[in-house]
Image 1: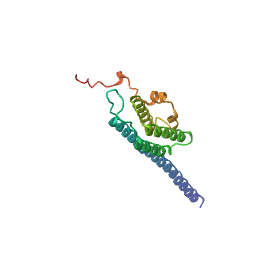
Image 2: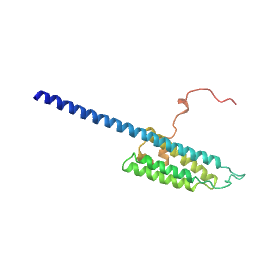
Image 3: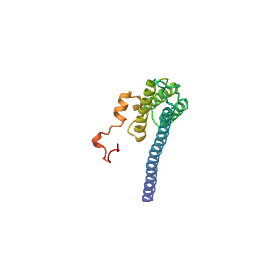
Image 4: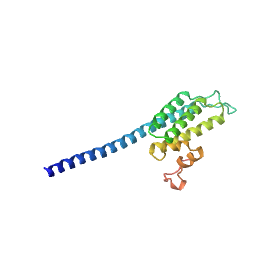
Length: 173
């Protein structure tokens, strides 16, 4: 009876350990899938904001905007998607993402009234795309959303040098 009990206990421990490992792997995979889904959704919203800004940006002869540009719908979408994405972070990372989302909400809601503000808004959207791509790919954490613009551009912006690009020929003139 003693040896049979050892086999039963061993089988139960093996099943328990196997179940715990399976649970951990499934939880990690689920988190990675949600991160990708939330990141892609946020990137889509940022892209929509850039496209809408480009579509309504019509300077007059002096370079001034014909009418102010506001991106209220995009602001709400960016904020809500950032809130969802921040749920995957903890502590300071969550707070950094939430603050970033609120700041971007404000920036997009205010929009632009002149050419300089449009350029500044485009730069903010570019930085948002850089950090969102890095976060979605797993290269950035929630805490990275609190970094200053210069660090975000340097760390997560395009950094391919001319000599690293493949040569597929040049555009004809």
